[in-house]
Amino acid sequence: MISDIEFDPIWGELHDRLLEELDYHHEAASIRRMAGLHEGVPEIVIPRVVEEATTRNVLTLEYVGGRSPEEACGDETDQELRDRWGVVLAEFVLRGLLEHRFLHADPNLANFAFLDDGRVVVYDFGSVKEVPEAMALRYAELLAATATGRGDAIPPILKEMGIFMRDGSLMPAEAVEPYLEIFGTVLRASPPYTFGEDPEIYRRVIETGMNNWQYSMDMQFPEDAIFINRALGGHFGNLARLGATGPWRDLVFAAVARLGVDTA
Ligand SMILES: Nc1ncnc2c1ncn2[C@@H]1O[C@H](COP(=O)(O)OP(=O)(O)O)[C@@H](O)[C@H]1O
Ligand SMILES: [Mg+2]
Image (cartoon, rainbow, N blue to C red; front, side, top):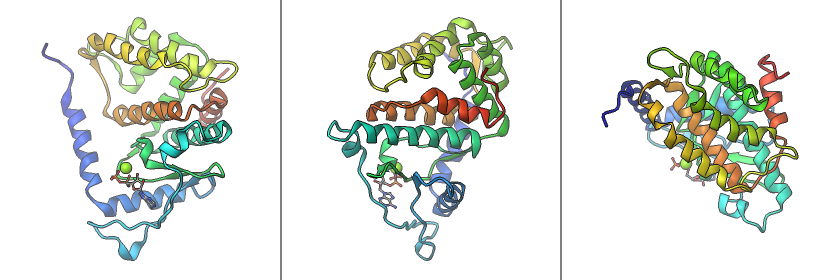
């Protein structure tokens, strides 16, 4: 089948991001900016750039070690510690998306290391993403609607994000509802959801994506959403590897409330 999906904006975005990854001055600037934004966030550790040993072709950082993902995620690590790291990661991605609007966009768990006092070290700022203010607001609205089970609100929010059918109509409810069901389960569970306890949920996410392929042929999808969704989806998987439990809905409510988005 020949797809009608527009590849030009997607290609343009990939091209821009990949070029950035080749210039270490750019990465060093991203690290300094990210470190500045996290000055008041003690649970996030960002290794310092060694300026005098950094060029366009060489990036030198202070060495900051920690437990690797393999060491951190094993059963031999206390559940309490894995929960704390999970919460730190969830807040990191929410803060980047909604508050700083400057997102660490490579969620591979190898880009993180884990300290025994609950802090998380973040590496690899080769892929970062500026989030337009309007886009951050729409994501906050989407999270709020999902966490409160307001499915009807979702297609209009998606339309404002630039996600709609090519004829201008809203995404059909049947394309959106499976996601609401899945992510609503995570955000609304009481007691709080434990990532990884329900392997079925990942099969459902993938299955929903495949079932929705028919729509993807015929819909608009903004380039900003590509990397944002990669970060969100990646951390969903990271929390599963950690097997983390945490106050997910409270974290989301607190983050969206800071943008003035209603969660009543
Ligand atoms: N400042 C640092 N201190 C200690 N280890 C680091 C540091 N920066 C990176 N690493 C380790 O090196 C790995 C590769 O670095 P990264 O910046 O992620 O490069 P790549 O683009 O190859 O993924 C990381 O996953 C991490 O384990
Ligand atoms: Mg890396």
